[in-house]
Image (cartoon, rainbow, N blue to C red; front, top):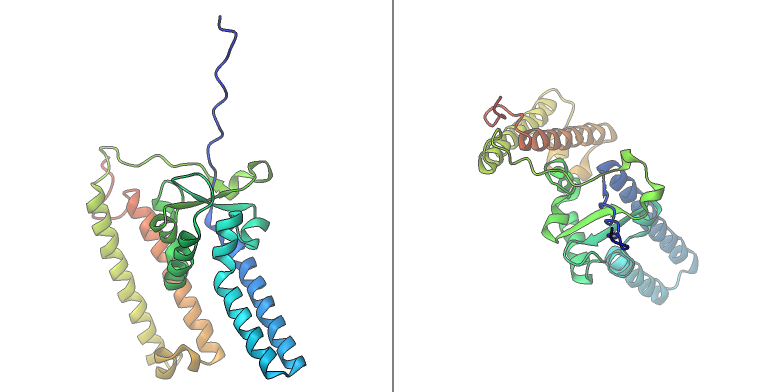
Length: 245
């Protein structure tokens, strides 16, 4: 018998679920709003044009650099940290570079929450901005997490019972286009019923409070439907690309 045993395998990475990531996003938003509100209060109290300009530049720089600097140097924003998350570079296993962190912010800024609709179709619960920057969001301290907050790497559903990846992607795209048509039809129907004005449809800033609630509700419905379509389509559960029995 050997006197030396093999070292234990490192624990498998635990990839954060959307609910955990969304909580971190909300916390970061609250922090950013607090910074912005504090700067506005200070500017209105001091009433000095030069100081106001300097303060404005500092606030803008802080808002733009908040996530890239913290993620690249510490692995997490404050929202990530307080929700026990960290951003990890897939190639190195460490923090992402500053340029990657900037790219993540830019892609999220363009796609918004729609960046997350593909989570369930990826092995590591990655959003679009994660995939494009080759990064993942993981649990920082597994000892402080419970199973509902993360997943471990999914097995690639590439068995013979599933249609080809391209077929699944094509069918998912058809469903998403159909869903977009449903969304546009819903908006037109709300306009025809007098529940949403043409001005609101053309410019969200001109919506009334009630119209904003309807618009937000419709957008959330589309987001949930898109996520469901992607998840079911990738698992072979959509008509046109179903798993063989």
